[in-house]
Length: 268
Image (tube, rainbow, N blue to C red; front, side):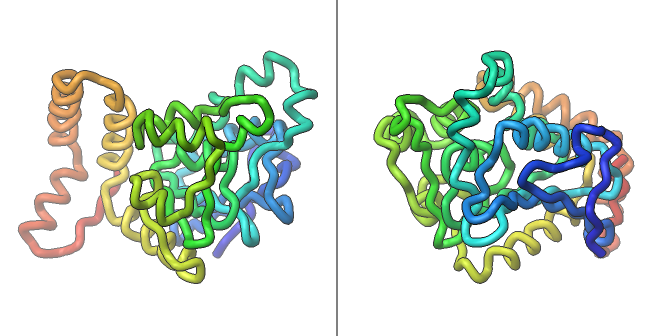
């Protein structure tokens, strides 16, 4: 049964424009942006989202985290007025806050439909998987405000699609569809809007079937070696492989394979 997540941190006593629920039976946490109609993300919400990801990362009930938006849109972006009111110190933390899904050791899925603009796009790019509906439109429109993306959007995008397509999206503030995003490798998959929740739930179940230890190791390894030399990446992969060979989960996986049964991973 879904339960509204409770947090000991007093800064999370009143969530600013989003909700958090935990389904312990499904080992799933849902963070839902919920500020109708466009789920604008305030400056304060950015701080809170970071703290929520950190808290869920430590929650033993949670294996997978899903980030979505209520209604027809994921998020049209940030509160424009908030940028002018925020202090330089606060603004300097924007990218760190929005990178929270990437730092989280657990798999994070972004379910994107409708407008996924600005910081909405940036926080989705920090997630491990982006499932886009056919209504989804991605954009980094900051050029229209005389600005550039400030929460890692252009940097992450360039890693995924290269400089030519990133310039098209950033320098022209061009919107791209969910299907184009999938074709370019930005989105993991593009699905019919009515199927978005079903596909996301199926992915959650798939990820739950793997070893939590192997999942954490794979995510950290891939993130850490994203810009590493090939020789360095191979070396780190080998070291992590060797470490996992000593784990109880690997032993269980091998035994289950030979016994033709489903493994019961414990995350150790």
